[in-house]
Image (cartoon, rainbow, N blue to C red; front, side):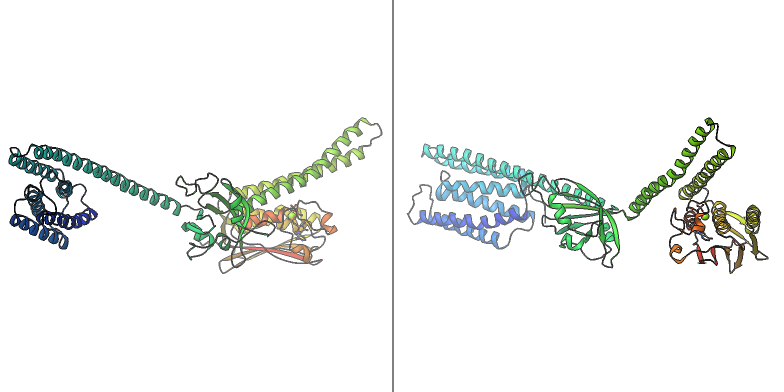
Length: 543
Ligand code: ATP
Ligand code: MG
């Protein structure tokens, strides 16, 4: 379709189509009234010219109605025909100075619609010509008609121009509106793209808690592919608090005046698995809010994040700090007490050398204990920060011999045999030296510490690309109930034989962490009063 005037739309074409038929009918009906003598018109020429004009006017109206113009030329011809017939009608049927002249405004509008400013100018010009012809014809006969003609001319042109300006102004409004709609939809697409790419789950519900919009992360978090639209928030989000009591998010919404964040709620999956969520919810208050009152709103927005991991780490850290400070307090209090005792004793003439030595030994033991604990903690922190976890090529035979030399004296002093049982040809492993040494040292010191008679055996076997390290003792063993706890931090058996020795209860906890870092797991078997065996494996380094 060709492009017409500024306001050419399918809607205006439709209006013109109907007006093109309706107006001729009215004009012809009024003409018939004149012809029949019901209404008088001094400009009525004769029946022949009236019927000829009326016939063509109706024919044109019907054609225009049944087959709207398709080409620019077609529209131009039709407009010319309408203008000619309208001129004939005004001049020879009822004169210009009648209310029907106002229909010329429609011709002005139609000309503008199809041919813009040029069409409009031509239509005005033709009207001026028609009025001029009428005046030239009547100025000698009736001065009143001339005056009426001029007034009508001015009135029609003015009304036509005003109507046009109004429709143009509206057109501008339409353009601005559709532009702002485009902008809005672009803005909406932008926001949707951002929301869909967020790692956090974002949901929006209506005022009744029914989900209307959600992003891809919501499906991931809830572990589903089903559409969430139309689901009630509490049916979808089964939340429980820390004491496992169900919590209705919708009830929380209702009390929320602004954005509110909670991190104490758990989401329960259908299979019973729970994750900890950080949930932020807020009422939505748009500037186009349907409700006028400021305390009401259009629904709610919910932002959720899985914080299971960070929360458990945080809680673990808090617990760790509280246990450590408790564990440190005892030896520090003992050392502090003993040293102040020594100070008092030194000023007292009755204090013997033995008393002083005993007190100092006690203080020294506690300081050694503290040093041991600080050492374990530092290894733990280095492992957790990933310091010294660079793997290196380790000659296992060399390492085991070094450890044997280190602990043989201590074992012998206790009357124990520290045996070595290693394969003839041992390969290398590729791991952090610190981690491997720390693990083996922990097992060896424990084995020596918790064995009164018998032996401690360090075994290293290589099989199918795997190197297995084992430390076995014939010591006091570990009871079934203790076996579940010995890897917990600061846990020491209640067994009196354990309590005779000093220790922080951190050794095996640290060893587990290091094993995890080195990509292995600690296995152990033990029987009370018979002995224990701790082992782990590492891949043999390919030559
Ligand atoms: P630390 O090693 O920090 O000085 P610890 O030896 O008491 O102190 P862990 O090495 O973590 O701490 O051991 C925890 C507990 O497990 C010990 O207190 C002891 O009760 C038990 N245990 C560990 N190894 C053995 C073993 N070889 N034989 C018997 N009991 C053991
Ligand atoms: Mg230990």
